[in-house]
Image 1: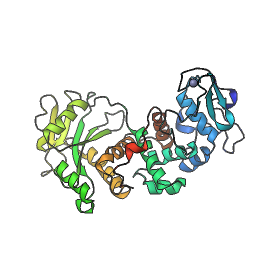
Image 2: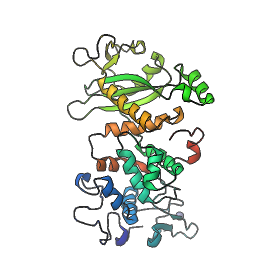
Image 3: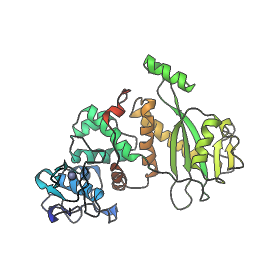
Image 4: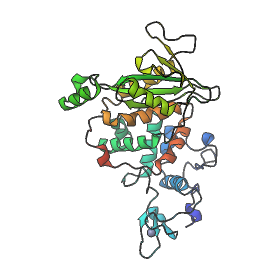
Length: 353
Ligand SMILES: [Zn+2]
């Protein structure tokens, strides 16, 4: 179907209080810098209009305005404006669906007004936001907020990574340990972590940071690794870094043997933190500091099972740190499409906040 004029994406009813020339509805063809809400307060007001949210999602999902039934694929689809629902007109199907279908919002009883504000808050909270804080802000239960957080984190996961270091920009590589103290853990958890890791109660994370090459700011990627041995670290480096790239690390034995595939140099932290002005891992140290502040301050004790989701969240905020709050929001929103996670996939080891 084609959208009737009244509900075409980007169309606004015109009688909404925030319909002003200053606050135009979002349109993906436009530069988002100066349009739409720019602050949390503006976002809460702007997206309190469910028509605005509906139109935004419809534009993302069906950019050419042509939509088909998600069940039978028929192109003959009607729109029930009073309920903001679509209905397949095929006699055998008659499927009703909303813009939430096939997105991280699917099956959620919560309105898009709350979801949009949740995405805004989570993508822009520099130190992260706990499910308790989100629950209070949105007036939802903590359980709902916890689920919302994980769904939004899924949208914050970077889809594909190209190899780094191929443009002459040096790559810093470092690792760190995160995780709660063993004595605060449940006995069963403690046993799992100590035996699986070697370092009591801690999980090893490896990070790779491509320094800015004069055009853009540095960007990071990170992942959980079983330990700091060469057998764990080297495959990650070969997967993510262009052969021949310049790599800077500390003097950890696990990084030996990277030459001659890479141009590897290291700094011995027992002697100094910077050698020859450029050989250091300070960019990653900065990222670790931000990550640990969020983990300690906001998330209390994420279980290893969910740690990668917190990592995804922090990586996106770090890599998009030069953008405005609005730009980060519009950056994440397209990734709400085609991604779903069910509650049962998340529960099982739910202790964190
Ligand atoms: Zn159908």
